[in-house]
Image (cartoon, rainbow, N blue to C red; front, side, top):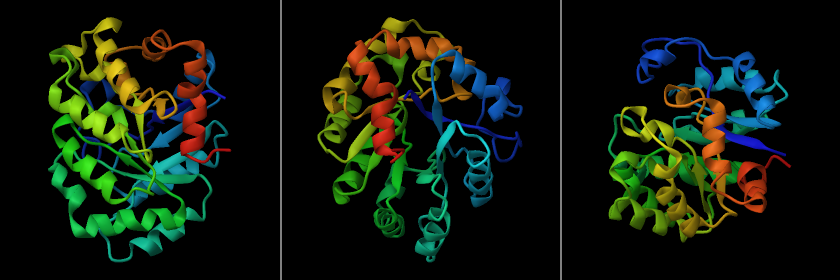
Length: 269
């Protein structure tokens, strides 16, 4: 089973989705993605939050329950709320609800280490929920510390920690990737690469040092492919994003990275 571990849908609202590139300021729906999945051999996807609201989480779960190809939802819950366990219990009643993510565009990485946030993270395991870490390269040291505090909690690093591809591999990024990879509870999404290239200009070889680094750190049993569609289409077609990763790994490795690992991590079996 081939699984795209990271994609989004939205009904564009300039306030909710102010961060999206100009060419993405429109609606994106299952009808837009499903043909692309089929053309590239994918049987399903993981739908990930793009707005910090339970309202969006409800909508994403409704889509998952109406679209067979959506195998799971990573939603948003306020993990700092006093009633966080109550909210997690409510959403966990839906088997499509697989995990939680909190975006960090306007926050310092230290927020991940605040007592209220850690209390929320501590509640996830009770409901067998995962946590997607969305952090920039300069915030990864906080992610390292967080994952060490909760060694039993399943974490996955989105977009390989958003390295600045056009500047090459930095020692700080590589050091933090090695630290994260040394922990068996942490996975990594091979996603979001094409949009980290300056001016969205890239060639496949530009990504090889980064792919080599995460493969050495995590091994091929804890990497999973994610298209980051539709964000990716500012820099590449869906097929091009797939090809960058397919051409780097062997056939045996691709079976894990393009499906098996995501299915295991998100409990799709």
